[in-house]
Length: 440
Image (cartoon, helix red, strand yellow):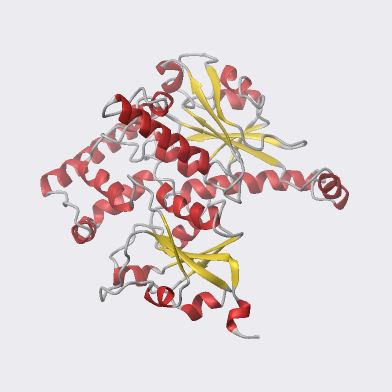
């Protein structure tokens, strides 16, 4: 059997750095997955990236966690060569290689996909507009807030944003289309994730003083809750969606699977019953509430969140551990809010190992009183969050600014950089006074 017979047309190869994962990366994976039935994703080593491009923000383990969490990825492959080699991808029986419509060069200035292109095994997908690792680093270094969105619901309707009425309408439609795409199932083609908005007063969203039911409006219908599944609620900013958020969500699913195992969910009889009704499925339905930009900025200050609610929402949508997303979730999940959830009162409300409790009150007091609060224990990525990522950038600013220059982006000047450091220190002192954690 020759090499050609071992290559599968529907097993697609995609590789990259995937440095602090954002929705642009997910967009490339979605498009690649739609070209086949399996998606293998190569992840370059820290050393190869440093040699060919510059320093990474996230290390290999953190970047692998992000790739593995994408619902459209079949398998991740660590230490993939920076210049894609036919024998290497041949080990995984992938015929076609996919990349964005930009040119990627190695340290010698040569096309990283030259061998694949020469073999006629290269396919191009469109690069996601208006987002890149470079853009996000720029927001950190320059402390800009122009990316903030006041109301995602109104923005999608073309009622908010910059430009003319026609430009706002077109941008809103494009954003809605992308949300619909990212809410697809593992095939990248069919509906997968339920999506809702929650509307209420600013006080109900940001503080603990307003017991307000608010109103839920469905944006997209996904697979919904299946018979026997436990409904679990989590919430957060999910800013710079990274391994810390991902590992928390993965641990939530693992905890629920362990409970289900004890209840016989995985017995052969139970599995056969589910298969007899169409297909097997997991025991948990995870609902993720995502806070508005102004809610996060109210608590975190400076120019947090670094990603706006649309960008953060897309990151959460593409995560395989999430079944539903609520845009505009409150900082404090009250009894009226939890009871009003479209899927009913949750069986559990989970929170991660990082403390998020101001001295004045406990945001999770209500779930605790209801007996549905559960805490995820310590995990290896618990200290990876938006604040720690920004600190990595600040500590190595010269290297990152040189990387920005190479990509034709104006580097932050010393005054702007020093301003960021001062603002971070002032915010840290304020949080110590309130006993708040670093941004997450």
